[in-house]
Length: 564
Image (spheres, rainbow, N blue to C red):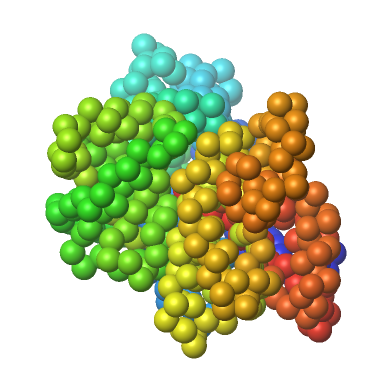
């Protein structure tokens, strides 16, 4: 339990606070509408469905206020830089922005479902009340309408026998906007499923922009003021006395006609702040979109990996950061994230792009068809943006784990280490790095092996062989690979990479690796960084918890994962 607190304590606390606020809002507004005297006559028409509709609405306001903030990537990057004084634990929370975004979205979906179902019951019960099915009191309340001459105000929005629940839904502001909001939400959620996001990213990208329709409908949803409450009158209307004699309303002093009014719309007050922040975010992205970007070099690497070396005036990066790329020739709206593989010390920034999905395939085909010496297609760049890997040099010991193309942030880190040693940087706090790279195909190692060869040679010349420990694993092997490796086992260098460190076949034994790191680095704080699949993330996170010790004199592991 204590080990878990080290890695997950603050995240759990934030989650508990968020859930606590949701529960408080739901319970508070449920009781307000279920017990509040100003809603007694409204409950006479609608029953408990009133509370079940209004309580989720309060939770929706709170979560709709939050939903945009985790995707304001420039804001998060700014906050990340300003949290240096607050320590790595606080900065780690910003790296879980997409996880929190999804949690908030799930809460919005759940509360929307409850809110919608409750209001469907309300529409039906408004109709039944008007038709006199719920007794004389409900019928009397339904007969009230807006009249200055009679000094009456309506409670039931249905004022005609010809008005059905369907007509009520499609002829009122609340009903129409509710339908639009719900449809937009359904499309956004269904297109966000993993299978669609991975295989049809464009579908996910375009449907997610229905959030504009969602928020526009949300702002106007409460303008209809369809749920009304009783107002204070002079002389006062005594509900406990008058509810048994509705026929006497307006005829005796004790029972003046009750007055009703809709509540002031509040949703816009919840969401206006985040909407302005997000608007500024998009404005900043547009400004960056207009800034010129030029090519320094274009390289097609093995396994259909495209390397772009780009130059942009005033561009400054840190290790492990990423950028969003836009190619107007493919789509003017689509932006895709890529981790930079260059080091801050270089006079350009580079990305390695693997062919996955329509956008990357089109970009690679465009580059492949370029004439000799031709410039690549126009590119727009938003960034650089911060990630967990920025903190790698804040740890005495770092474990870097990359899976496939997930090695890209660590290419930037290892390059920067080479430059720091070359320049004898006194600010380098890191004493040791363990690097693990898992690949399915042998040729995937080729584009990165050159960097490791340079580092391997440089560490030997400086007498620092123990500073960088790297292990490469081929996970997509067959018996022919093993036989070939056995034949050449006595060679000084690996037959796949040309490195002194031999390639492993299969997957690492993480228990053995963590135990080795713990024994070799007693009393150290170890940062474990992953850029790879979620299944591997869960496994490494458990190992960090298992091998951490709350004793400050012993080894502690902190898990960090790249999230886009």
